[in-house]
Image (tube, rainbow, N blue to C red):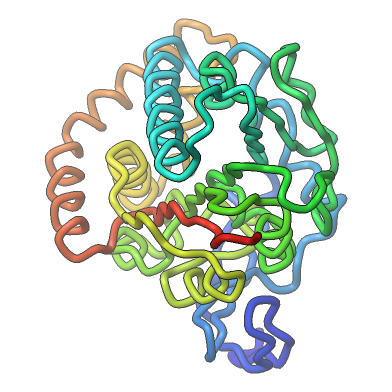
Length: 331
Protein backbone atom coordinates (compact mmCIF):
# COMPACT_ATOMS: atom_id res chain seq x y z
CA UNK A 1 0.00 0.00 0.00
CA UNK A 2 1.36 3.41 -1.04
CA UNK A 3 2.51 5.70 1.77
CA UNK A 4 1.31 8.77 -0.17
CA UNK A 5 -2.17 9.13 -1.68
CA UNK A 6 -3.05 11.69 -4.33
CA UNK A 7 -6.80 12.12 -4.07
CA UNK A 8 -9.11 15.11 -3.64
CA UNK A 9 -9.92 15.64 0.05
CA UNK A 10 -13.66 15.83 0.71
CA UNK A 11 -13.11 18.38 3.47
CA UNK A 12 -10.59 20.90 2.09
CA UNK A 13 -10.02 19.77 -1.55
CA UNK A 14 -6.27 19.27 -1.02
CA UNK A 15 -4.75 16.43 -3.04
CA UNK A 16 -1.95 14.96 -0.92
CA UNK A 17 -2.41 12.56 2.00
CA UNK A 18 -0.19 10.24 4.00
CA UNK A 19 -0.91 6.68 5.13
CA UNK A 20 -1.94 6.99 8.78
CA UNK A 21 -3.05 3.55 9.96
CA UNK A 22 -4.12 0.10 8.86
CA UNK A 23 -7.07 -1.10 10.93
CA UNK A 24 -9.17 -4.26 10.96
CA UNK A 25 -12.95 -4.50 10.87
CA UNK A 26 -13.55 -6.03 14.30
CA UNK A 27 -17.16 -7.07 13.73
CA UNK A 28 -18.03 -8.47 10.30
CA UNK A 29 -15.39 -9.17 7.67
CA UNK A 30 -12.06 -8.92 9.57
CA UNK A 31 -10.86 -7.04 6.47
CA UNK A 32 -8.00 -4.55 6.73
CA UNK A 33 -8.88 -0.92 5.94
CA UNK A 34 -6.36 1.83 5.30
CA UNK A 35 -6.71 5.28 6.85
CA UNK A 36 -5.05 8.33 5.32
CA UNK A 37 -4.44 11.75 6.84
CA UNK A 38 -4.78 14.93 4.80
CA UNK A 39 -1.62 17.05 4.84
CA UNK A 40 -3.71 20.22 4.80
CA UNK A 41 -6.74 19.87 7.11
CA UNK A 42 -5.71 16.81 9.20
CA UNK A 43 -8.87 14.85 8.44
CA UNK A 44 -8.30 11.09 8.62
CA UNK A 45 -10.37 8.98 6.24
CA UNK A 46 -10.78 5.47 4.84
CA UNK A 47 -9.54 4.92 1.31
CA UNK A 48 -10.71 3.33 -0.86
CA UNK A 49 -14.21 4.08 0.40
CA UNK A 50 -16.35 0.98 1.09
CA UNK A 51 -19.20 0.44 -1.36
CA UNK A 52 -22.82 1.01 -0.35
CA UNK A 53 -23.34 -2.77 -0.49
CA UNK A 54 -20.48 -3.39 1.94
CA UNK A 55 -21.64 -0.66 4.30
CA UNK A 56 -25.23 -1.95 4.32
CA UNK A 57 -23.97 -5.22 5.83
CA UNK A 58 -22.56 -3.25 8.76
CA UNK A 59 -25.91 -1.65 9.62
CA UNK A 60 -27.84 -4.82 10.45
CA UNK A 61 -30.04 -5.74 13.41
CA UNK A 62 -26.97 -6.59 15.47
CA UNK A 63 -25.77 -3.01 15.06
CA UNK A 64 -29.10 -1.30 15.77
CA UNK A 65 -30.63 -3.72 18.27
CA UNK A 66 -34.40 -4.15 18.52
CA UNK A 67 -36.92 -1.31 18.64
CA UNK A 68 -36.99 -1.58 22.44
CA UNK A 69 -33.41 -2.36 23.44
CA UNK A 70 -29.85 -2.74 22.19
CA UNK A 71 -28.05 -3.62 25.42
CA UNK A 72 -28.74 -5.59 28.59
CA UNK A 73 -31.07 -3.98 31.12
CA UNK A 74 -28.64 -2.06 33.41
CA UNK A 75 -26.82 -0.57 30.41
CA UNK A 76 -30.13 0.37 28.77
CA UNK A 77 -31.22 2.24 31.89
CA UNK A 78 -27.92 4.11 32.03
CA UNK A 79 -28.16 5.04 28.33
CA UNK A 80 -31.72 6.27 28.87
CA UNK A 81 -30.48 8.44 31.73
CA UNK A 82 -27.75 9.88 29.49
CA UNK A 83 -30.21 10.60 26.68
CA UNK A 84 -32.66 12.29 29.05
CA UNK A 85 -29.82 14.43 30.38
CA UNK A 86 -28.74 15.29 26.83
CA UNK A 87 -32.32 16.32 26.00
CA UNK A 88 -32.37 18.62 29.05
CA UNK A 89 -29.10 20.29 27.97
CA UNK A 90 -30.39 20.73 24.41
CA UNK A 91 -33.61 22.23 25.77
CA UNK A 92 -31.58 24.70 27.85
CA UNK A 93 -29.51 25.88 24.90
CA UNK A 94 -32.52 26.26 22.62
CA UNK A 95 -34.25 28.38 25.26
CA UNK A 96 -31.20 30.66 25.43
CA UNK A 97 -31.74 31.77 21.85
CA UNK A 98 -35.46 31.29 21.22
CA UNK A 99 -37.98 33.21 23.28
CA UNK A 100 -41.06 31.34 22.01
CA UNK A 101 -42.90 30.33 25.15
CA UNK A 102 -44.50 27.17 23.81
CA UNK A 103 -42.09 24.48 22.65
CA UNK A 104 -44.68 23.14 20.21
CA UNK A 105 -43.67 25.95 17.84
CA UNK A 106 -40.06 24.71 17.67
CA UNK A 107 -38.83 22.04 15.24
CA UNK A 108 -35.97 19.63 16.03
CA UNK A 109 -34.30 17.10 13.72
CA UNK A 110 -32.12 14.22 14.92
CA UNK A 111 -29.99 12.76 12.11
CA UNK A 112 -29.13 9.11 12.71
CA UNK A 113 -31.23 8.99 15.85
CA UNK A 114 -31.42 5.20 16.27
CA UNK A 115 -34.26 4.42 18.67
CA UNK A 116 -34.86 8.17 19.14
CA UNK A 117 -34.55 8.18 22.93
CA UNK A 118 -33.39 11.80 23.01
CA UNK A 119 -36.14 12.85 20.60
CA UNK A 120 -38.77 11.05 22.68
CA UNK A 121 -37.79 13.12 25.71
CA UNK A 122 -37.80 16.34 23.66
CA UNK A 123 -41.19 15.41 22.25
CA UNK A 124 -42.55 15.13 25.80
CA UNK A 125 -41.21 18.65 26.40
CA UNK A 126 -43.46 19.83 23.58
CA UNK A 127 -41.13 20.11 20.59
CA UNK A 128 -42.06 19.09 17.04
CA UNK A 129 -39.61 16.24 16.50
CA UNK A 130 -38.27 14.78 13.26
CA UNK A 131 -35.92 11.84 12.77
CA UNK A 132 -33.76 10.83 9.82
CA UNK A 133 -32.37 7.29 9.59
CA UNK A 134 -31.01 4.81 7.07
CA UNK A 135 -33.60 2.88 5.08
CA UNK A 136 -32.42 -0.40 6.65
CA UNK A 137 -33.53 0.69 10.11
CA UNK A 138 -37.08 -0.17 11.17
CA UNK A 139 -36.90 0.62 14.88
CA UNK A 140 -38.76 3.93 15.36
CA UNK A 141 -42.40 3.25 16.21
CA UNK A 142 -43.99 6.36 17.66
CA UNK A 143 -46.64 8.79 16.52
CA UNK A 144 -44.97 11.71 18.32
CA UNK A 145 -41.97 11.75 15.94
CA UNK A 146 -42.14 12.30 12.18
CA UNK A 147 -39.71 9.81 10.61
CA UNK A 148 -37.78 10.17 7.36
CA UNK A 149 -35.62 7.42 5.86
CA UNK A 150 -32.94 7.96 3.25
CA UNK A 151 -29.36 6.79 2.76
CA UNK A 152 -28.34 9.71 0.57
CA UNK A 153 -27.90 12.90 2.59
CA UNK A 154 -27.00 15.21 -0.27
CA UNK A 155 -30.15 17.10 0.69
CA UNK A 156 -32.37 17.27 3.77
CA UNK A 157 -36.17 17.08 3.29
CA UNK A 158 -36.88 20.49 4.84
CA UNK A 159 -37.37 24.04 3.60
CA UNK A 160 -34.83 26.78 4.28
CA UNK A 161 -34.86 28.08 7.89
CA UNK A 162 -37.45 25.49 8.98
CA UNK A 163 -35.65 23.93 11.96
CA UNK A 164 -34.67 25.40 15.30
CA UNK A 165 -32.20 22.65 16.26
CA UNK A 166 -30.39 19.76 14.56
CA UNK A 167 -28.76 16.90 16.47
CA UNK A 168 -26.07 14.85 14.72
CA UNK A 169 -24.68 12.72 17.54
CA UNK A 170 -21.88 10.32 16.55
CA UNK A 171 -23.17 10.28 12.99
CA UNK A 172 -21.03 12.72 10.96
CA UNK A 173 -18.15 10.23 10.91
CA UNK A 174 -20.44 7.70 9.18
CA UNK A 175 -21.32 9.97 6.24
CA UNK A 176 -19.62 10.08 2.84
CA UNK A 177 -19.92 13.85 2.42
CA UNK A 178 -19.60 15.56 5.82
CA UNK A 179 -19.08 19.03 4.36
CA UNK A 180 -22.27 18.70 2.34
CA UNK A 181 -24.41 17.70 5.33
CA UNK A 182 -23.02 20.57 7.45
CA UNK A 183 -23.98 22.98 4.64
CA UNK A 184 -27.45 21.43 4.48
CA UNK A 185 -27.86 21.76 8.24
CA UNK A 186 -26.90 25.44 7.99
CA UNK A 187 -29.51 25.88 5.24
CA UNK A 188 -32.42 24.35 7.14
CA UNK A 189 -31.64 25.97 10.51
CA UNK A 190 -33.50 29.13 11.43
CA UNK A 191 -31.88 32.30 12.81
CA UNK A 192 -30.03 31.35 16.01
CA UNK A 193 -30.71 27.70 15.18
CA UNK A 194 -28.67 25.28 17.30
CA UNK A 195 -26.43 22.48 16.01
CA UNK A 196 -25.56 19.73 18.49
CA UNK A 197 -22.69 17.63 17.16
CA UNK A 198 -20.48 14.90 18.62
CA UNK A 199 -17.73 12.82 16.96
CA UNK A 200 -14.79 10.66 18.08
CA UNK A 201 -11.55 12.64 18.48
CA UNK A 202 -8.71 11.19 16.41
CA UNK A 203 -6.29 13.51 18.27
CA UNK A 204 -7.35 12.10 21.63
CA UNK A 205 -4.98 10.70 24.22
CA UNK A 206 -6.82 7.39 23.89
CA UNK A 207 -6.06 7.11 20.19
CA UNK A 208 -2.40 7.97 20.87
CA UNK A 209 -2.25 5.08 23.35
CA UNK A 210 -4.23 2.40 21.54
CA UNK A 211 -3.92 3.16 17.79
CA UNK A 212 -5.46 0.26 15.81
CA UNK A 213 -7.04 -1.18 18.98
CA UNK A 214 -8.97 2.00 19.79
CA UNK A 215 -12.64 1.19 20.32
CA UNK A 216 -13.90 4.37 18.62
CA UNK A 217 -12.18 3.68 15.27
CA UNK A 218 -15.07 1.37 14.27
CA UNK A 219 -13.96 0.78 10.67
CA UNK A 220 -15.46 0.66 8.12
CA UNK A 221 -18.58 2.36 9.54
CA UNK A 222 -16.52 5.41 10.51
CA UNK A 223 -15.46 6.80 7.15
CA UNK A 224 -13.94 9.98 8.62
CA UNK A 225 -12.06 10.74 11.83
CA UNK A 226 -12.06 14.35 13.04
CA UNK A 227 -10.06 16.62 15.29
CA UNK A 228 -10.38 20.35 16.01
CA UNK A 229 -8.37 21.30 12.92
CA UNK A 230 -10.61 19.40 10.53
CA UNK A 231 -13.96 20.01 12.23
CA UNK A 232 -14.09 23.65 13.38
CA UNK A 233 -13.12 25.27 10.03
CA UNK A 234 -15.93 23.31 8.36
CA UNK A 235 -18.40 24.77 10.86
CA UNK A 236 -17.06 28.31 10.58
CA UNK A 237 -17.23 28.11 6.78
CA UNK A 238 -20.99 27.66 7.23
CA UNK A 239 -21.20 30.62 9.63
CA UNK A 240 -21.64 28.55 12.79
CA UNK A 241 -20.62 30.23 16.04
CA UNK A 242 -19.24 27.81 18.65
CA UNK A 243 -21.07 28.30 21.95
CA UNK A 244 -19.87 25.18 23.79
CA UNK A 245 -16.99 22.80 23.06
CA UNK A 246 -15.73 19.88 25.11
CA UNK A 247 -13.68 16.73 24.62
CA UNK A 248 -14.75 15.21 27.91
CA UNK A 249 -17.47 12.57 27.92
CA UNK A 250 -17.44 10.43 31.04
CA UNK A 251 -19.15 7.41 29.50
CA UNK A 252 -17.39 7.57 26.10
CA UNK A 253 -13.96 8.04 27.65
CA UNK A 254 -14.46 5.43 30.35
CA UNK A 255 -15.84 2.62 28.21
CA UNK A 256 -13.59 3.51 25.29
CA UNK A 257 -10.54 3.08 27.52
CA UNK A 258 -11.82 -0.17 29.04
CA UNK A 259 -12.65 -1.86 25.73
CA UNK A 260 -9.53 -0.49 23.98
CA UNK A 261 -7.37 -1.86 26.82
CA UNK A 262 -8.97 -5.27 26.42
CA UNK A 263 -8.41 -5.14 22.65
CA UNK A 264 -4.73 -4.28 23.14
CA UNK A 265 -3.88 -6.65 26.00
CA UNK A 266 -6.07 -9.73 25.51
CA UNK A 267 -4.77 -10.53 22.03
CA UNK A 268 -6.02 -14.13 22.12
CA UNK A 269 -9.67 -13.00 22.43
CA UNK A 270 -11.97 -11.41 19.83
CA UNK A 271 -11.84 -7.62 19.58
CA UNK A 272 -14.72 -5.74 21.22
CA UNK A 273 -15.82 -8.96 22.94
CA UNK A 274 -16.97 -7.19 26.12
CA UNK A 275 -18.99 -4.64 24.13
CA UNK A 276 -20.69 -7.40 22.13
CA UNK A 277 -21.59 -9.34 25.28
CA UNK A 278 -23.31 -6.23 26.66
CA UNK A 279 -25.78 -6.34 23.77
CA UNK A 280 -29.28 -7.60 24.51
CA UNK A 281 -29.20 -10.77 22.42
CA UNK A 282 -30.38 -14.02 24.02
CA UNK A 283 -27.74 -15.47 26.31
CA UNK A 284 -27.03 -18.87 27.81
CA UNK A 285 -25.27 -19.69 31.08
CA UNK A 286 -21.83 -19.62 29.45
CA UNK A 287 -22.49 -16.13 28.04
CA UNK A 288 -23.40 -14.84 31.49
CA UNK A 289 -20.28 -16.45 32.95
CA UNK A 290 -18.16 -14.74 30.29
CA UNK A 291 -19.91 -11.45 31.00
CA UNK A 292 -19.18 -11.81 34.71
CA UNK A 293 -15.48 -12.38 33.99
CA UNK A 294 -15.37 -9.38 31.65
CA UNK A 295 -16.94 -7.21 34.35
CA UNK A 296 -14.24 -8.32 36.81
CA UNK A 297 -11.55 -7.41 34.28
CA UNK A 298 -13.21 -4.05 33.60
CA UNK A 299 -13.22 -3.25 37.33
CA UNK A 300 -9.45 -3.78 37.36
CA UNK A 301 -9.07 -1.36 34.43
CA UNK A 302 -11.38 1.39 35.77
CA UNK A 303 -8.72 3.13 37.96
CA UNK A 304 -6.49 3.51 34.90
CA UNK A 305 -9.47 4.68 32.84
CA UNK A 306 -10.31 7.36 35.41
CA UNK A 307 -6.69 8.51 35.44
CA UNK A 308 -6.71 8.76 31.64
CA UNK A 309 -10.01 10.67 31.79
CA UNK A 310 -8.48 13.20 34.21
CA UNK A 311 -5.36 13.73 32.10
CA UNK A 312 -7.43 13.96 28.91
CA UNK A 313 -9.63 16.61 30.49
CA UNK A 314 -6.61 18.68 31.52
CA UNK A 315 -4.98 18.36 28.08
CA UNK A 316 -8.32 18.75 26.22
CA UNK A 317 -7.62 15.47 24.46
CA UNK A 318 -10.71 13.48 25.41
CA UNK A 319 -12.07 10.61 23.34
CA UNK A 320 -14.86 12.65 21.71
CA UNK A 321 -15.45 16.20 20.53
CA UNK A 322 -18.88 17.62 21.41
CA UNK A 323 -19.91 20.99 20.03
CA UNK A 324 -22.95 23.21 20.47
CA UNK A 325 -22.99 25.87 17.76
CA UNK A 326 -25.53 28.32 16.43
CA UNK A 327 -26.40 30.02 13.18
CA UNK A 328 -26.36 33.84 12.95
CA UNK A 329 -29.40 36.03 12.43
CA UNK A 330 -30.63 35.38 8.89
CA UNK A 331 -33.38 37.98 8.54
